[in-house]
Length: 299
Image (cartoon, rainbow, N blue to C red):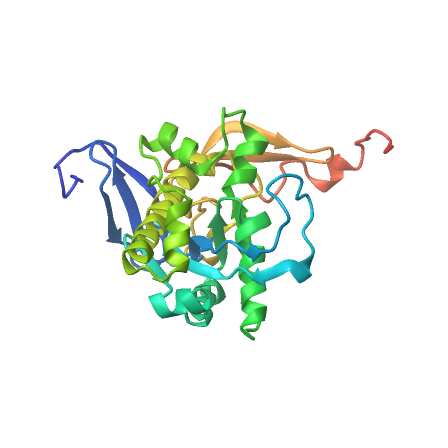
């Protein structure tokens, strides 16, 4: 299959979403998809949020290790969010209006991201477990919203720290070495102008937020084969064939190796699309043979 943009044949499959096979051109970077009848998969949401700074009373610029909550002039709120379903070309986003920004009113945009989180089976964010998810939960509660439906979380920052020793684990650095693209350059003036209700600044914030999600998807796809205990996307596949737990592809082949535990051996597989490794759920050593096995004493 050729790339619809540059006609290149250097195409790589990048997993499935719902009933569509996604692929990416390795020459021009264009994404495309085609339908696969009878297949569905988990809904994976990549997202990023931007919040406002807090305004507080301080006595000086040095030594403010702790500021009492009584010193808060204006608490933080959510300024914008951006999200996309995995392998879907459309980027969804919302940003405060100038009036909302001046008043610190994030109710409208919080309800927008809450709806998406409620639909997701898996969410992906950079530093999401420590920052984005907890910040979202805080604003959900502040706006009297119920918790979204249960989902599993993948934090690409934690994946990067756990499995690699990159010079930096920031999304900007990772995206530059993996995709040759970095984040849109900004400075603190952008946030100050947004707080003042500057329409141009708010529009730039939205574009900045949207680009972050595009980069996040690229980084996630590159890191995906390394993610241990990745949520099993194949569970929701309506197929009688084995499928990759990480991306849902049926292009999985035995690699001739075994995943070994203290009690059994499991045939190992490699995904031809995303490169992730998985194992059979059924062990190769029958129960009768395992009855003679010994294991070391626990501590």
